[in-house]
Image (cartoon, rainbow, N blue to C red; front, side, top):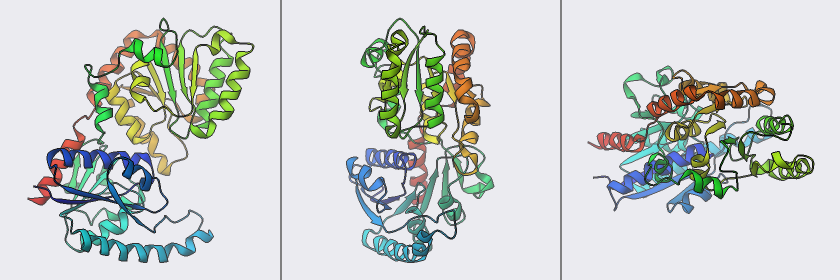
Length: 378
C-alpha cells in the first residue's frame, strides 16, 4: 500500500511528462494515495502539473550559469540554502513514504534532504547522459530507473534498473490499433492528399532552425512536384516567419504548397503519428521513446546544442538496432531531401525499421517503475 508520495523535478516537458506518467500509474494502483509535486518557481511544471490535476509546491531554485562571471550566479548559494530549508519543511509537512525525482533543479534539494532523513528515494533518468542534478544525487538515492542502457558510468550498477521512459496513457494508446485513429481520418485532419505518402517533420515544441531550413530546401528544390505530403511542425517561436514564407512560396509553387501543412504546435500528436509514413525528428529522450512505440520509419537529427551531445547518444540507441537513420545537424539542410526520398523508395528498409522499432518500445515503463517503488517500501 502506497499512501503518501512526493515527486520532484521539471524544467522541460522531457522531465514533466515522465513524472506525470509515474504519478498516474501510482494513482491507478492506489486511488486513495496522496501525491504532491515539488517544482522550481517560474518553471513550466508550476503550470503543467496543476493542469494535469496534481498539487505542486515551488522552490526558489535555479541552475548555475555556464559563465562563472554571470551575475545570476551570485544568487545561487542563497537560492540553494533556501531550497534545502524549504525542502526539509515540505518533507516534515507531508511525511512522504517515498520521494521520486525526475531531474531538474527542484529535485536536487528535495531528494538530498529525503536521503539524509532516511526516506526511500528513487530517480528516473530519461537520457543516455544524465543531467547534472541526477549525477549529483547518484550515490545518495536508493534506486535509479534508467531510460537507456549504459548508465553505470554515473550510477552504482547495483541500484540501476533499466525500465525505459514512462509514457502517459494518451501516448500509450498510439500503440493500440483498436484505439488509434485511422490513417485516412488523420490525413484529412491535416487537409492533406490521401493518395500521397506523408512525411512528418518535427523539431520539438519550440522548433529547430536547421530543420526548418531543411524543409524550405526540400520544398524549393521540388520543382513544384512534391511526391509526398508534409506535416511541418516548425515550432511556436518560428511559426509566424515560416507561415509567411510558405504563403509567399505558394504564389509561384502552388502545387507543392498544397502538399504542406505548417504548424507551430501540434495538439493532436496521435493524429500526426497516425497520418505519417515516415518521421523526421529531433532525438530527445521522450521523442525516442514515443517513436519506438509508434514504430514508423524514422530519421533522427540530434540537436547539437545539448550537454555532452546526449541526443546523439539517445539516437544511437535506435540506430544501432537498425530502427532509425541518423542525420547530423550540420548535414540536414542539404541532406534531408535525399534521405526522405531514398527511404520512401525502399519498402524493405521501411519494413525492417518498423520491426526493429517495435522491439525497442517499452510500453510498460511506468508499471516497472512503480513496481520498484513498491519494492523500496517493502
